[in-house]
Length: 302
Image 1 (tube, rainbow, N blue to C red):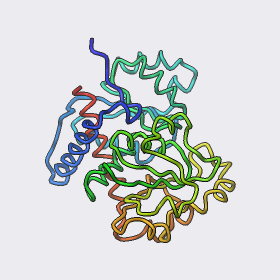
Image 2: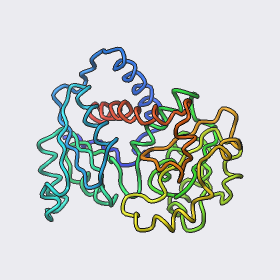
Image 3: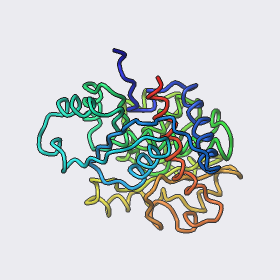
Image 4: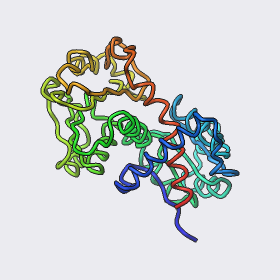
């Protein structure tokens, strides 16, 4: 039996596969808007395991499977035996014997790795504390739709060096662009990953310098799930890194800006930019649906 193919980080794809996936996502989006059915996953079942709250991840995967002719099962950690102490490898063996694919949104990245190691079907990382690769697929699709290939461009990350930042670091080395990470001391991304990406990503403490001539500006909430008690401290440290009009003016004249949502207007991003009529943030959010449809097709056809 052929081993299943998993998507735990962006590095599970080749550069050509990322570009092909984006092309397919754009095609699927066009077909969906035209009302053309694409039942490429007819009869397939996706199990969705959540131990972290979700809006976009759940809706996009569930709707995506329906649009491709399949179905999705929502499994919350507290309602399954996983939440009652069943070993991850036992749950993986059982669940994967009954479905065609599994998506997991949880805290520890090691838990997703362990599940995948014992799963007989593809496993998708829907978010962990270390990585959020599905989000970056949607972000890349958005950039490609509006500006073309991102290779050779300058991208600026503003704020905490978190899981989304980590996935953007992987994207930089996969697609060959420059990523400048603007963050204060104490909020750096993982050192080992930074070393692995050193030819494409580096830290710049001054956000005004980091944003200079950038083609794309990115940010995320300052306190991720599980860090709420640090909100005030984080807000004080990260306030100079707010994505706002002043920073946008430092970027390239046609620069885009993105936020993976949910957003706190007036904190990591100004309300002015969030509500601007020409923002691509809402396009970015919708693209979670189409990028993930293309991803599921790829994993099940490989």
